[in-house]
Length: 307
Image 1 (cartoon, one colour):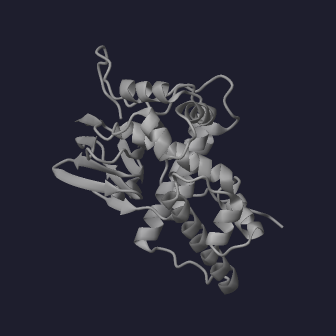
Image 2: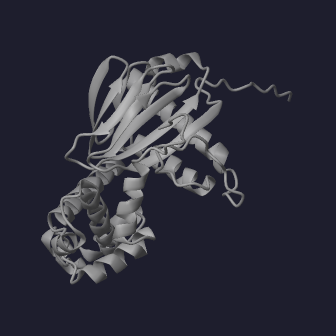
């Protein structure tokens, strides 16, 4: 038998990556704006932001993503109330299919959120600098980076663009799913949402595994499996992370001091809160507050801004 190979077409290909940022903005953060000759998309992970895209003024909430085409002026700012978490990726692509994204504001689904999470993970494994500096103009791969991380970033960003374009264009009708498995997965996700909402409502309490399972009418075993499969961690570990993420947001909104935050979140003392904060973030609450404030201040000698 004689085989003949085919060259697989690339509908969307990325040539260069210019920025990869994941920001935890203060509630009063403002980026004055810029334009550049490559693409950029901004996706809100948590909270809300306000952006300018050319002549448009747009409010974005969690899960929304705006695409800035080359040479389009754009700015970004917090709404003054909520401290948002935002992913920013900029890149060059000569693919004609990128025209689909011109002036688009879309909403990501669970699969696309997972892809973007992988982009952030690969970025942290690849680049030596922090991903939360809005004035960073050059990505520098670290010498001891994870093997293949640069290619993985390119593949994942391309996968994100392909996935969201296909979903909104409805080019391909997905195959009929396995009904029983889909029902089970939907049930799991709904239960996970119920439990995490319960945790948010009890963020200032000292919840135990028994309390969480009892109040949500779910067995300990299923609860543990649920978080192991979908969150890759234990139930109480997830709750403790949620406390620290809430603390970070409260620090960025600057409405309470550290003692008040510790009390609000149910910590026995501000010293214990500070110790837990350092264990999860690698810095103290005051160091985190200083880093966020410093990241929001543009260096005086910066000739060009990059967000």
